[in-house]
Length: 203
Image 1 (tube, helix red, strand yellow):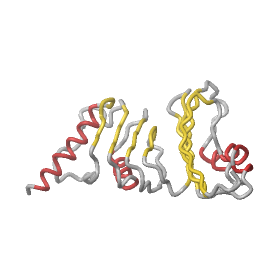
Image 2: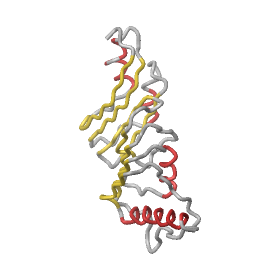
Image 3: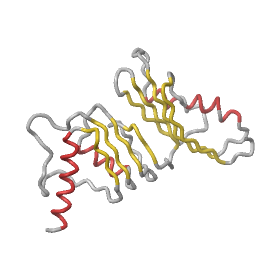
Image 4: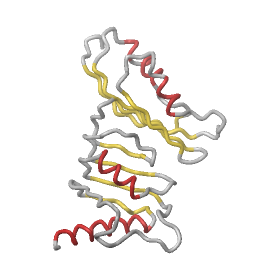
């Protein structure tokens, strides 16, 4: 691969006991290339472990890239529960169309190329988070949400009037919305957004 000019990887690994990080990429790929190519990558590692004493952080993962040539990169590391963790490492700018198993831990990055997004968390997704999603994923066409935790507790419900203080959330390119595994609060929210749009159109 000495003449390789560009390398693109999109890899999802499950049931792994260690996360793929900068050290792995350097030792397993880059070190074997005398002339490093343009390297675009997205690698997601899902770790299932009962070891809660050695938890890796985002900063730990970032530091593994310090002695490599991979400077334009980012890491999102999420602990879904005691045993399940997902680590996403990717080059910037992000060039891929699909991103999944994303939680509330969303970085301040613009994912211009992403058209298919899957959110999953055990912490409720708030209204402000969905505003952040619309800004980060402006090209979104397919949107899936998995979260059974209610957004609100008690008798409070998502505001259903068009002139409420909540900002309207817009997905201008959305053609598919999957709410098959969510709390009813999320259904209420998206129905409310639809009603507000109808109100604006006819008033």
